[in-house]
Figure 1 (cartoon, rainbow, N blue to C red):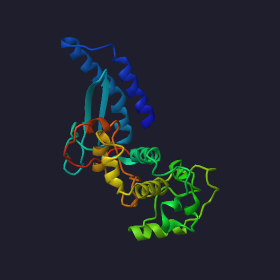
Figure 2 (spheres, rainbow, N blue to C red):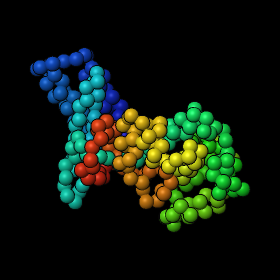
Figure 3 (tube, rainbow, N blue to C red):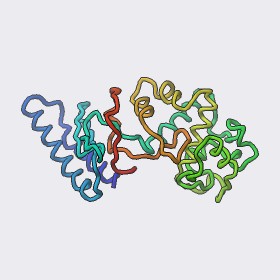
Figure 4 (cartoon, helix red, strand yellow):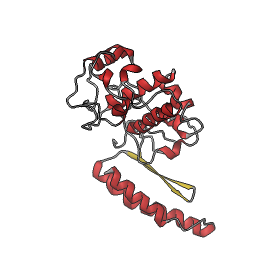
Length: 255
C-alpha cells in the first residue's frame, strides 16, 4: 500500500514541476497539488481506517504540507505540520549508514565477525556472523521481533547467546529487528560511544537525521539500538528539517 501511494505522490511532484511560479499561478499550483494529493491519499485513509496522516511534497525546492485527521484518537488533536511521527523502520537505514560511516572512519570492517566488537557473544553462533550479514538480514534466521520476555540488556545478551541459526549465514534473507539492532550495538561499541550520541553527532550531524532519531520511540519489544518498530507517516521526514517540540504521538499506518 505504502509503495503504491508513494508512487502516486511522486507523480504529483512530476506533474507540478514546471518551474518557479508566483502570484495567481502559485495559488493555482497549491490548489492543484492539494487536489492530486487528496485523490491519492483520501481513498487509502478510508480503505485502511487511518486516523491521521501527513504528506509532504517538494517541488523545485518548495515544500507543501498536507495534513489529514488526528494525531491522537483520545484527545482528537489534529495532525499539523508540527506533529512528530514515530520513525519506525526507517531507523534501519540510519543504522546501516552509521555502520558504513564507521567503516570509512576505520573503526570497523563490515566483513568482521560480531564477536570482535561484542566480546560477550564470543563463542556463540552469533559471534561468528559478519556485521554485513546483520546489515543485510542474512545472519541465519532471526524472528521479526524479540520475544516478549526480553526486557533488559542482560536478557538481550542472553537471547543473542542462545540463538541458533536456521540457515547458513549469507544465504537466506529474513527481515528482522534483532539483526539490525545488533548491528547498531556492535557499531556503537566499535566507535566508543552510545548509539543515540553517534546518530545525533556523528554521521547525521547538521542534518534532519538527529531530530528524527532523538524523537523516535522504540517498540517495547526492541531494547536494541537501531531497531525501532513503531508507526510513521508517509513522507514524515520533511517536517523534521527544523527541530520542533512534540505536540503528541501519532498513530497512523504501520510501515
